[in-house]
Image (cartoon, rainbow, N blue to C red; front, side, top):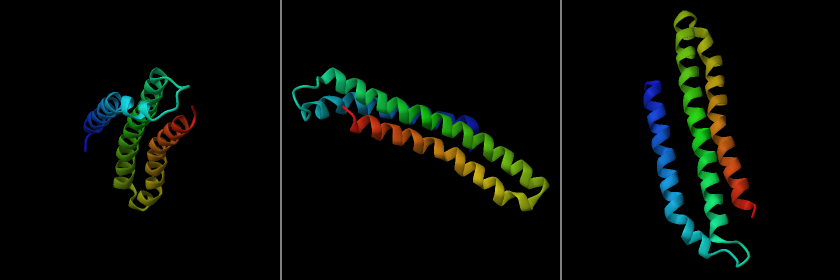
Length: 109
């Protein structure tokens, strides 16, 4: 998969999350108590979508760059390939951090 394909996939995921946020925010806003307004809930869901989307974009770019470098180094020294997979796993952790931030935003209000 080319780096451009990963970026297109990440942009598609962000747009789907933003669409779901705009559709589902009134549904979830109706379940909240009277002291929080629907506008606060709208910003809450938008910030959750942005946290996940931006971290997914960053993770997609990082994994693409690390994977290219790992395969290039494995072509010269095959024994280094296993150690280079660790860096790809660290790059995927960026998306998990975005998910954790989204859960923190969800809990607080």
